[in-house]
Amino acid sequence: MKLGVIGLPNVGKSTLFNALTHAGAESANYPFCTIEPNVGMVNVPDERLNVLGKLYNTQKITPATIEFVDIAGLVKGASQGEGLGNKFLSHIREVDAILHVVRCFTNDNIIHVDGNINPARDIETINIELTLADLESLEKQIAKLARQANGGDKIARKKLETYEIIKDHLEKGLPARTAPLDREQKKYLEEAFMITSKPVIFVANVSPNQLDNSQDINVQTVKDIAKKENAEVITLCADIEAELSTLPPQDVEEYMREFGIKELGLNKLIKASYKLLGLISYLTAGEKECRAWTIKKGTLAPAAAGVIHTDFEKGFIKAEVVSYDNLVNCGSFNNAKEQGKVRMEGKDYEVQDGDVMLFRFNV
Ligand SMILES: Nc1nc2c(ncn2[C@@H]2O[C@H](COP(=O)(O)OP(=O)(O)OP(=O)(O)O)[C@@H](O)[C@H]2O)c(=O)[nH]1
Ligand SMILES: [Mg+2]
Image 1 (cartoon, protein in one colour):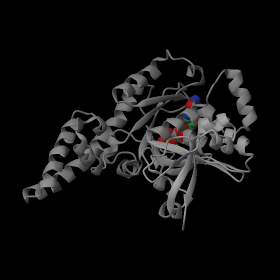
Image 2 (image 1 turned 135 degrees about the vertical axis):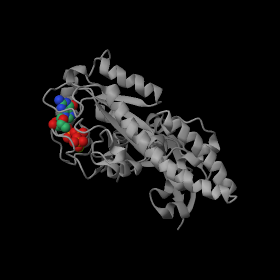
Image 3 (image 1 turned 60 degrees about the vertical axis):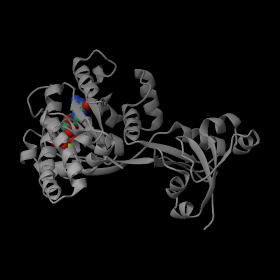
Image 4 (image 1 turned 60 degrees about the horizontal axis):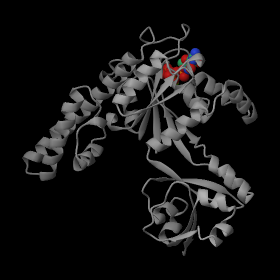
């Protein structure tokens, strides 16, 4: 599961990526500073782990992680090979979801490739290039499907019909994500590997003085566009987040208190990204380690156990499950058991976010 950070050149993508991953990727005040993508793992903040850690007097806390990829900036004409062109687009095709960084901060010293701050125009520039890239790829697929459909292939015919709908939609300048498709057609859409079918979060990169200003016109523009596209917006200042990410935790807390910040932009962004990917965490807890494990929402108990070890899945017998809230309220696993809050679940159990699990298996 990975998220790609995209946007125009020089808008703060690498700055944000560094704040997220502490990877120390190169970031500088000129367009196309990033050429090859930077890849890094990010810990998913989860307050529940600290609480469990205290409850179990644990030696080690291991959060869940997700992968972020910092991609080269995209300019007008990229789908025709401008800037870093098609190479850039192929990197976007490989990610599961997109963080679209939009410059809202004002600073005359930082070059804007199109001369001035204009989030609506900037978002459109990116969207047009992604749409054109999708159209080009779709047309190739349509030509191939048409040959197969003519040869009497019934599935190819259905797929072709779907792809024609998507093509019309893209030609209106709309993302494949919002195409009017039924369930079966949505499955075909997945097989088309469209960039514009990937879920998106917009990141409004603002100046520090815009952080708590919900009236800001540029931020409002991003929010309006996101609403139309069925996407979320996170407002943050990449510069500040990057600076804070280098400080010791107690200094960050003091800073946040001083400025009345309840939650860091990064934390909000990571949590929203996790949700966007359709991911949840179940937890394991003990004296040695308290840990969060990542699964797709809807995963059944044996497959969830398989995330820890394939033997757990192969030899799965049952799972002892208690919800995080019940466990914390009862004060210990044994108390929870005595109070009937620990359930015995079998192979058909769909694991929930925050389930504290103990697997029984034989190998
Ligand atoms: N004032 C201000 N400057 C920022 C902010 N975010 C990034 N910058 C500056 O903008 C310049 C470009 O930042 P990068 O993070 O390298 O931008 P990028 O989007 O990765 O650029 P490319 O890799 O060239 O596409 C750097 O000089 C940053 O210090 C911000 O929130 N506020
Ligand atoms: Mg960069």
